[in-house]
Length: 514
Image (cartoon, rainbow, N blue to C red; front, top):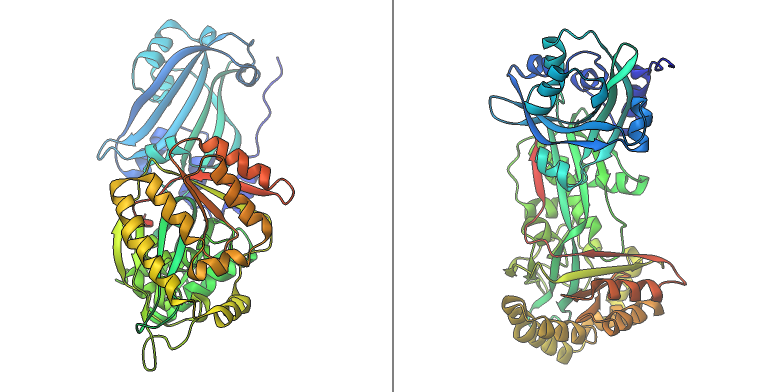
């Protein structure tokens, strides 16, 4: 039988560090040790370590497992899933999955392995089994729902995983995978921020006739989202999914640091979504960077204060409110006229330093209403100078449109959310696409946007609308989600694009300090 190859653990861990960022000495030891992980955890934590068996059963070896253990496919193996946790407080430290060929176990060893919550290292020591550990891989992955629940982390947080085999008499006795969060066992305090996205249904008043302007309506979304990590450093630096994302986060963090008198930080944007597609990514990223910095330095600042510091929310307050509280939100806009907050019509990107609007109403949005996002691969929604020019050209909008908008929002949309009347909500959203500044935004879109709205409604959506300046189109339904998804793909077949089925998030950004 061929002897197993020796895996160069130090090299693999170095390669992993180049991908995910700096690893602490403790993390490197956990990934690279060839001794008992349980004993190492007891030394690290100063607490006895307990095992909790989550699942254990005899299963036939798959092709991959058989190849790993040098047995035949279909041979019986013990499949074991356990948590290693601190006895003092029950905190989960390691999630481990193992496969053990039953044909290689003595009866007493098998009894201990299959009937008791005993660490494998303790079992080996108890039975005086001489063995060695060969590390075969060290990698990272994103937390799924199961790992997020087990470790109380956010979805999509990075996890570190190592794979190794325990050999006895030259044969694999056990194959094990051990997983733990990247943000565990760090040697510096870290802050993790996970944000919602938002759809922006409409701006309310771009006439300014009543000494008010702006105002908005929107909904916070579960997905997509932004996941950002931060730790103290001598200066502000950001690593991101792209140079554009990193630079936007850096500018926001720098602005927050200067405004609140904070120090430096090393930020890493682990996940983000496309900017300028109508989902408010710029606001979420900016506030997340500012909030992470404030949390790092224990600076007590409200979300609205941070938004103003990073120059977000100068027109619409929906993104700020989505970050702060989630749900279905209506904001009250700004005072308008000489000497007031705003003296002209302009988008948030050109309204830096103006406070985000106050929230006038907020209600949970029905979680069983599916929100389907169609994002065609067409030029990004208006932003920068182009957006500013559109505001100058098309504002003020007709006063009659604003009057009907207020009616649709207050008399139809709000009651339908409270009473969970999807038909009435859909009717209001569909009518809003034909009024005020939203009518302008729709009119200026690529032809595929109107086709998406029509196609998704025909496929069963109660409503379809353009989020902000687009090009994202959203649809709302409580059934037929897959039919609407298929219709969106069909409309976008010539331009390409993506479709995401999500739902409302009735809470704001989630923040964790470790």
